[in-house]
Image 1 (cartoon, rainbow, N blue to C red):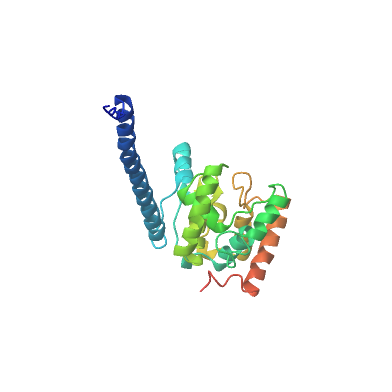
Image 2 (image 1 turned 60 degrees about the vertical axis):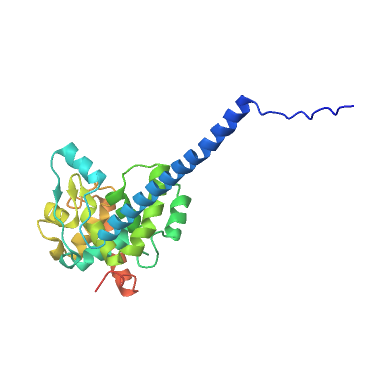
Length: 249
């Protein structure tokens, strides 16, 4: 009796095409992911290079300053190195905006907790974070900006000295509408240079931060007079207790 021949199942043409399609899709997906990783690393390298370079060279004006220039048609800005800025001005800004500037690495957790507890009535941003926002990012509240700020702030702290961070801040901060940097502000409000500012004038300039468009250093309200007096006392305090050593010679 003849044995029945074993039947061999032949794969269908449709299943062959599906297997071939999956096989082609995998290398394509790998190439896409590879290119995305390369693009990300390329962007990261450019960012690190630019930030590191700005630790020595003057950074670009930033999106906000550029936008104000386009809106107003003209702005006032005169870049000056740190040794041409009165020490009282540097101490006043630190006392007003970031008293623990020399003690943290970009984020002041104590100030942040106080800002959260106050319901957002007081700011928790450090001077380093404000430099990152003014030079590399944009103004306004958004999760995207905050995420980028959180990534760039440690990089700035790692590649710049504290003195350099403060120098850049003093040259990019807005002190009145269209008036950027402490040199332009000193001339605008007091008709003097940044290096010749008195302790009182420096405290007055620092008191308009962070709302320069609604405050005036030359025509201070009663509130600003109290605030500038407190800043002057704070500047003397951080000088005495060593919290100014990281940016003073």
